[in-house]
Image: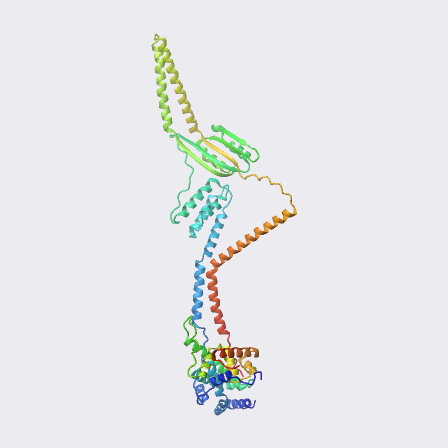
Amino acid sequence: MTRPNEHTDLETAVREATAWDGEPTELWRSALDAAETMPDHAPRTRRGPKWASAVGLATAAVLVIMIMVVPGVRSERELMVNALAADLPQTPTAVADPVGQALDRLFTDGVRGRVSEDRLSADVAGGGRNGLGLFRVHRDAVTVFDTDSSQPSPPALKTPEIVGPTRQIVQIAALTIETDDIETSYRLAGSLVRIGLGEYVSSGTLRLDPGRENGSLTLRVVPSRLPEVLSDLRRLGAVRDESLRTDDVTDRVIDLGARLTNLRRTEAELLGLLTDRPDSSLSDILRVNVEITNVREQIERLVAQRDELAALVELAAVNITLKQAREPEPEPEPEPKRTLWRTFTQELGAAWRGGIRELLYNITELVRFALGGGLWIGAFIVAGWAIWRVIRSARRKPLTEDA
Amino acid sequence: MEDNDADIAAIRRFAQGEREALGEIASRHERAMLSLAKGLLGSASLAEEAVQDAWVRAIRGSATFEGRAAVRTWLYRIVINRCRDLAKRERRRSMPLPFAKPAPPPVQENGDRHALVRRVIASLPIDQREAVVLCVALGTTHTAAAELLDTPVGTVKSRVRLGLDRLRQSVGGDT
């Protein structure tokens, strides 16, 4: 006996409260009758409480909804999109198609608007040497992202077509190109003119001072070759700026011609006066000569203007500015003399900054986890609680009745 | 020990078809079985239902009874199992409202201390209730209760002590 024999009042009260004080029941007789009439093995079904099933179903539904909706999935799609943009080829020969395909895939996946302009701009601009073509695609992409994807994208920026000879058009293009080797690019740009066609380099400046390398050229090329020359120039480096200005000078040419005709007619009339009236006074003759001189001056000025216009129309101008692609490495500052105290303070400062940075990082991560994972944590707690309740109720095995 | 031998002999006779042999066993144990069920379930009617079902199971298991455990232990286990099933059934039937606090035991009325004790026992966790009823109400030793409940002796002692402490707090009484 491991239990003390003496009983307290409380134990006596428990014994009396639970004692069977009813009439003799002889339940064994009714059980005997029941055992003879009932089937030997009544089916037993062990089922968990209904609320457990309901909680389990609700939790599963919440989890499914969260998987479908939560921002984590969206961020994965954004990552995919970013990867597409980042995978753009860097070679200038294959610009348009990969970018177009990437944009098509973006639109097909229905992730319009989830790629920020800045991100796409940065990634596409990262293509570097892709020049105007890449810039054109970037502008289209931004425009399309701002509007509905079902609407067609606006037409791409095109180089203006060269107009026919009936119009007098002056074309002036300007490019700013960043290149690693300014001298080579300078000479390559100058070699693009074809002297046989009358093309030439109208001006050129090359500066090779260390740290301030730059160059500039002005090419005069046949208007029909302007697109070809621009295309060749873009391959020299990364185009940072490009513009093309056209000016229709047809009216000015016509006006100059008319004014020239009039002045020449005036000149002829003045000359006729001199020859038709040889007996005129000296003062009259001198006055006519002065007038003739003035008219001829005007004629020469107009002719010069006409020739200048004709030259501008005959050959397009291409202004090229060459810049160093990378800033030269700054001169390293002389290493300060390392003393024991300086080393100590530097290491201490670095450790302090590193600790603060890690602390802020951890706090940020905790806040992100608390905000982003709150729903998940709640769902898992509810699910775990429900599972624990079911397991606990199922864990209580009945006492073995084998004897 | 002599009672157990007599019980085993009666079981053998019952298995051979002598119906009255079961009455002989019942005369020794049915009252204790009813007390055990009443203590665990807190209701006389439920206790009768539990004991009757326990007898049905015992009748069906009598043919395979081998005598490895005492007949009383065997019957008590059947009763406890049946009481657990019935308690679970009753709990589902009278499911409390969600988040509703359990009603405290009513104040002692007309000196009916037994009714209060029964209510407090019924409010004990099932593990403590089984230990208290077996060891205190039925006078089973801790060792026997541990064997019966398939639990270490120390655990049984601990449950009894916790149950009595709670009873003492609710009902009062000497230690």
